[in-house]
Image (cartoon, rainbow, N blue to C red; front, side):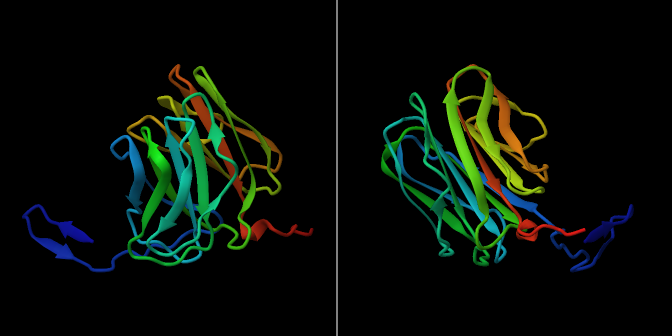
Length: 232
């Protein structure tokens, strides 16, 4: 922390603030990359150091319906799993991967490899704290369509207080839908949005985009604190 007086003199205090995550689910960081198209690989580095036990999410969109993702790895040695089958539309695809209970790393680079040169790839990486380190994924689903109103389709949350993540590819996003908060909109116009803490029940991730073909997908995560009922 540096304080500058009107005279120009300064006072410095190292370690003036201590940062600690709050209780429950917390968003930590996001970054995105759009490599030169077409691309057989895409690399992206998390902007800040990563904390052991957190959750990494990698969202990959590209502008063809034939190329597939061969692998998702990172320099920290985390294991990535496909959340559900990729969502494929007309000339568009999107896949979502996650790594649970990640390793601590001062600098972590994610590498996505495609089966062939992918058109217009757009990769988004996120980190969250406060998720179950054993079985964080609760439910997932996605859909494809056209128009300005995007809807991932319904999923049913099993726990109150879950984390819901929605993501799009193919259109220029202008706003997140419902109670969702925009996490990022990439230079390509693709987005990530999330909702933390909704009641248990049926929910859709929605957004508003330009009038282009679009894909939307939705993931649901739950906190380890909510695996058991709270008794009165």
